Image (tube, rainbow, N blue to C red; front, side):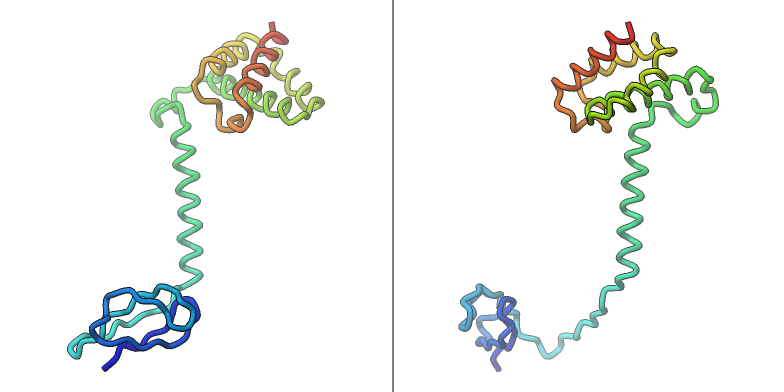
Length: 167
């Protein structure tokens, strides 16, 4: 009994001899290269297929995005959870200075000079910490993720410019 199947490309029904099962052949209608399925054996049980649950798929996709986001957040953490309890106000201030340095560099790179000037005024009182952070950023092999789209030489120039403004 010949094998009957549909072409994946033109969807027309095709028949092939039993001995062609498991091989490749060309569709006589459109020429598409098709896989010829193996003939069904008499003792073979039919598989029960179920449609994809779109709601479940979207939930899984959302959880994967959240997992990726959390993983990225954890990878960028610089302290262990135990150390977090002993963090002083100075460390919190330092994190704030880092955020403001990155914000300033991003604003200048994007041409938001008025906003950058306001951020600079926030950075000026933390001059010593800002300069130390800028020096570390200048030495870093990879830029901060928020600044990774800025060309290396431009970013280095912005770092030098901010350092000289703070000095």
